Length: 147
Image (cartoon, rainbow, N blue to C red; front, top):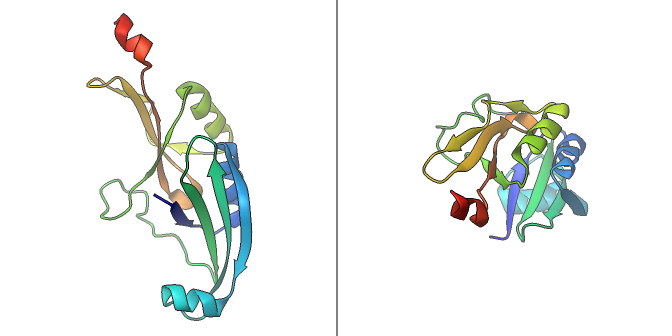
């Protein structure tokens, strides 16, 4: 995969959130209305985007803020809505990551759960504009061998 695009209402706030998740901005640009109309078919809009990368992944994250802004879909965070559902991040220390995100105002939908079939820890939370996200931590191979 090349990139994942997320439309947000506050580009600076969203970029700050993903920086706290370990991403760094690698490109920023304004997008003029004529270009956006050619690419998306949307007329009368312009935009600004920030491309971000994470050292643990080769996939780029592109945050895009349109002007005029659209209000977020009230059901964007519903896990059973058809279409793109969530963005998952593999972490090494689930508890530390949860506490860091809570301090930034992230809303978690449950306590951390463990899927007994694999030992994977996971938790869903809401990111910028209510976008559904997941943290996951897989057991280490050495832990599997000890049990």
